[in-house]
Structures are given as C-alpha cells and as structure tokens.
Length: 303
Picture (cartoon, rainbow, N blue to C red):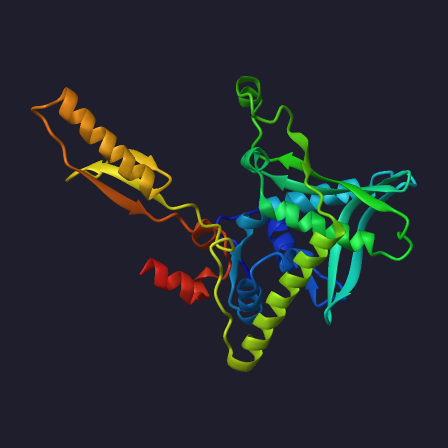
C-alpha cells in the first residue's frame, strides 16, 4: 500500500501511516477480515502495491492506536486481561482475534472492545460490532484453561470523535458523554459457531475460485453498505419529490390518496403524479473502500 500526503500532514502522522502494519499473527484469517467481504480481502491482496491511501485518512486510526496503547499500558488488576490475541482452527484455517479487554469476575467474563467512532454509530448501531464481538466470545470460550468460565457480557467502549455537549443537552437520544458503553447482544455458542463456520466457508470458496480462475466474486449489498431503495412521488414534469416512501405500495397508496384529495378540494387544478424508484446509495464503494478503483462491480455501476 502506498501512502500519500496530499494535504501536508505533519511528518509524524505520515510516518505512522507508513509503519502501521496490522498483523493477524500466525493465522490464516483474522476476525475483522472474516466478517468482511471475501472479494475485498482478495482484491487487497492482489492490488496491495497499487492501493493509495492518504495519510489524512488515517488520522482516526492513529487516534485509535493511541487510545489502545494508553489503556493497555495503564495499571490493571489481576482479574483483567488486555490485548490478548487468541487462535482457533476452524475447518482447516486458523482464525485469530485480538481481544481488547477481558474482565473476569466469579468465573464470568465480560469482553470489552474499544472503538473510536461517531455519534451516529452509537445511536443507530453497527451490525459488524455484534458479529465481531461474538466471534471474540467464541475464541475466549474455546481458550485452553477457560473451560469453567462463561462469557456473559459484550460491550463496546465507544470514544466519540464528533461528540457535542450542546446536542447532548438538547437531544434525548444523543449520548450524554463523549465516552459511552454500548451493550452488544450475546449469542449462544451454537449460533456463534454456525456463523463462523459459514463465514469461513465463504472465504475458503472465494480463495479457491481466485486461485483457480482469478475470479474474486462479487460483494453483497450488505458488504457495500447499500442503503434501502426508496420511491419518490412527484408531480409530473417536476424534479422535486413531494414525498419519499419506503415501498412501492406505499407510494401507490399515497398517489391514490393525493389524487382523491385533489378532486375533492382542488377541482379546477388537477395534478398527474408519477412514481420514481431511487436506488439506495452504495455508501462504502464511493467513500470507504480502498480497492474501489480496481473493482469492476463498482465501475459498471457508475458508468
């Protein structure tokens, strides 16, 4: 990966970006890669020396690393384990995951993962948090010497980079502090095992196709963070929608209601309405995917 500095970032930031080498340890795949798109993993490997990332885009990664370092090096009690990388063989591949914090009390384990993130993520939630932490729970449960301990709680410690005190005071659903804990649903062991095996099979099948045919497959709508399609109701000939609805049937019902209202209350000025499908944005592809420039799936959609 090539690091650029198009915005004139201070050299220490650039040096961090250049030297930031994430390692999955002695494993075939990490938890964070397992829960992500097989296509993106394969394309990152294929185009590693061509991918360009600007140092400015890694500022929050630097902040996250600093937070982890401070918390890891702070004084810990004997019933806390920090930054432990765990391994587990799953169907021929070794899976690894680095667990930020394990709090042990009366043979019960609480897993805490630190995230430097946005207020939006805390308010609306992120499905990948649930997937990631339940994979960690699976690894902890299978760790040698923990056969008598149970993981009973999963938490995100969210450090909010865009927190605003004024919004916290005015908005009911806004986080009340710049650091908050978010409870994550805990799966039973069977569900976690099934999920991990399914994801592992997905990556292994993609690897075989890539090795044999050079085919990296396709990303799913979920992989591309696709927003839901909507249907816009417009007066014929106008660009601006008078209403945007979540389903076609809702749009049809709205047009029917609005047409009847026009007849009843505005008999002289009648309108003709049309319904326009607005395809949901593929949020990740345009803004957050480092291999978008090499992706035919993305290029074909924007032509």
